Image 1: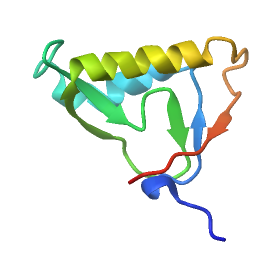
Image 2: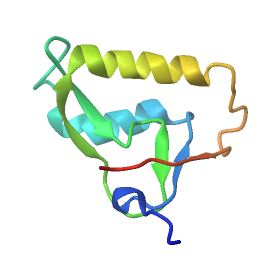
Image 3: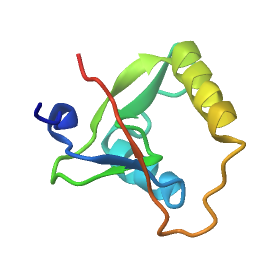
Image 4: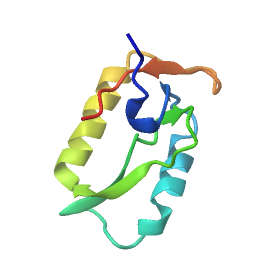
Length: 97
């Protein structure tokens, strides 16, 4: 069985350290175009993720309520786990459809 390449991103890891910087870099070109309701700019894979492939994150305006709810849900799910070292990576598996 062949492994998925996660939409061309290769192996994807959670690395919470540096997420704010990655969000800034990925969404910079959209800055000032959308803010809050009804849309936010979001990136996929999200800012907490790093990946192996040399492929940029996909960014687009998304419905703010759903985007913020997803971020809260992911934050709550990860709260019991802490990354104490900035080099620590957790591999995640996505199914891109």
